[in-house]
Length: 430
Image (cartoon, rainbow, N blue to C red; front, top):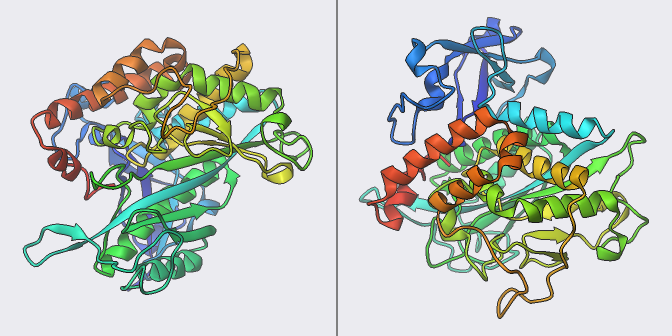
């Protein structure tokens, strides 16, 4: 078979959509998709009144455009991969696309001479299919946290993922097992924000497809098991200044005592917009099975130094490794939009000089000083997002209108389902 090009883009449901093009198209820079893809839900229902989707304007095409130098090796034989930006029939970038929202967030920080850099940590649970077709936990009887080898992965699917990722040029920092089994963590290298998320959405697809070929269904859903921990998408953030150096750094030591005005402003922004952020970065019904007290998930409006119980973790490392970690997001969010939301809330805190509340003094298991957490449900989180007019304005009213509409549809579709049914509504896609 001749080589092919697979142009892809990440939609509002965190699904990577795309197509295959013949070899002669590899050098071209655009292809068309139906804009009403943004109106499709997990169950294939077309939500025709969803704003920004043009469903009621003849269901027109949109165009995915990319730069030729962004074409990269894929993980299927002879297949090249690329992503880019979506434009409507008038030639305008589509504002409800997550990648467009992230570009806006990056541009906001560029006005301060700062370039956001991001490192993403992904957690996922593994299933296999029983003889009756039902999904069952991947059997790892000797599995344990920080494990490797056949007791933690008898089929070797994580080795296959690493090999495919290395061949395709992805920069993996680590693969390991998590506290609960069968749960795995994949961490990608720090990059400039847009490059980091481009890498992440493609790597996540690689991981799911390679695992599936090994007989494993790998899901990044926030809470696929209700008797075990959840899976997050931790967003690690720093900034490069005009001199290229880490703008958070104040010497080689990190932690609270080394926090400069920029870092304090970012944390203050995340605290002020804590409840509204949940509607954007934890945007599925299943997210609120994960976001619970005493779960190290980002529930509480709090922050602290090297503390996994808080939502915002200030690293104890300084110098080049000085960074903040926002721990609320999960991979049911469009990763571009989740990073954009975190960047926009941080920028609001820095520009508006929000006061920084005291650091958390509790252990967050037996008790905490935080006065409140996120909403108890997706519906409540969407209410909080709508009420946070500053965050909505920063993210873009068009983006938030579409997002809230589609997510309220999800609430309605799943309201009579069991928790397992709501989980299975999305498990084959995320």
